[in-house]
Amino acid sequence: MKEFTYQFTISASQEEVYNALTNSFQIELWTGYPATMDDKVGTIFSLWEGDISGCNLEMVKDYKIVQEWFFGETEHPSIVTMLLKKAGKDTRIELTHTNIPADAYDEIVEGWKEYYLDSVKNFLEFY
Image (cartoon, rainbow, N blue to C red; front, top):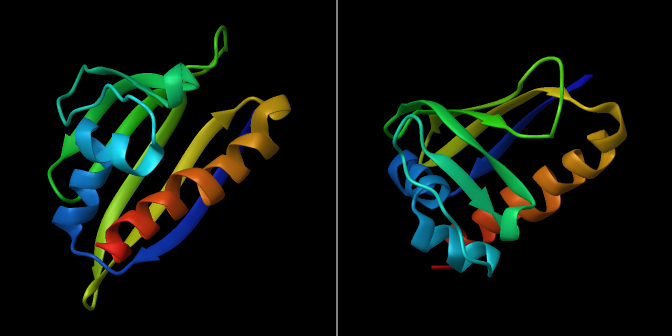
């Protein structure tokens, strides 16, 4: 099992970033796929036609998102934590993704950078 940590800055407010990550309508705009997501603890979510699915564990409006991502049978849950911190006029996302199966690590890291966070950034900075 591997861990990925990453910091990423988006030119948008914490509220805008939080909404882009938790509002299913906005997620559909930046992914191009139907999404099941909200900011309630216990919600089972699905993104990219089920390529990413999991459960919301802890949600602090405009500041913190903690999710378990499902990878089938694993000994330890794979936990994603995103902290949204004010950085001047921007928002810095501090991402930690733990217990990533080794055989999925490279794909997950590429996914975070190219598809997930870059897509949110392009969506928020374009509008």
